[in-house]
Length: 355
Ligand SMILES: Nc1ncnc2c1ncn2[C@@H]1O[C@H](COP(=O)(O)OP(=O)(O)OP(=O)(O)O)[C@@H](O)[C@H]1O
Picture (tube, helix red, strand yellow):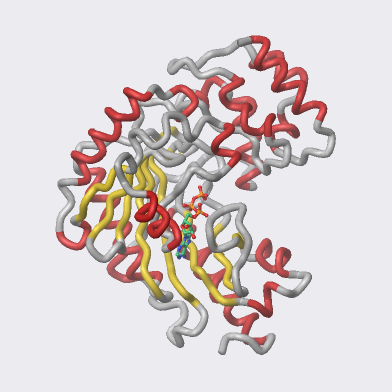
């Protein structure tokens, strides 16, 4: 084990071109301090840095082996978290979803010409299980069972069916993935982190009849709650998600959380609110300008391709979402995305697009 962590670390140090936060913060001194430590779940430094050492082009490069890694490896993870989320202190506020009865936004694109679809997701972790690097096949199956029991209690608009990946035909999987509902096992960063071990056992997707509320079970995180629909009605999407979170919190599930860090997730880039609110939006003109990235940075928004992180845009359609998830409340993260999307729409129109 010591050999593995040493060779992973050496690979990282040798990658002088790497710009990852892992490389930036895992200094020789810190490495010496952390390399022998183990979390309550048996997680090691090697478990946390495997992906970033094998993929030195990572942006972040470090994953938490389990909820306790945020304590055991805090000197590394805290530095990465502060840098990624651009906060100087780790004092994430208590959850606040805002007054969902009186939101001051609705459809961000009433013309219907620019926003193709809207989606808001949060991640949640069961407090008593580790993350993929330390999770056994049996744990994953047990966790799936507990989760499905809770999901089956949902009613009304949220009522749905669980579809395990085991036994799902390739065609169905492909169709659900192409339609942006389902995850797959194609992310090399997640793969190197152990995210696809024992694939597809213990993984699956729950959704309601019209696929506006979905839960990913054991993809990157133990749980991802997703609300989505065609068009730009952020209000409908957000209110549905908040309803689902509240119902699931009352259904017997308890989620890993830590003072100052909010809800804990496998990747430190997601913790805090864990909320990513996105639109798929047609912005060929703005995206073609050299200042596109700077424009996004100014509004704390992030642009991705439309088949998920690390993919390219298709036909000028981009995934635009809030970048910050920590150090602000859920409703503030939504408002940040909303302001960003409004600015993107205004700019695209100014450049002659949006029609
Ligand atoms: N606004 C949206 N409308 C339709 N589909 C979306 C939207 N935003 C994201 N998706 C789809 O959700 C799937 C997952 O995307 P992606 O992996 O980028 O984000 P994520 O689920 O938020 O997780 P992570 O940030 O951890 O990668 C992809 O199929 C993507 O196209």
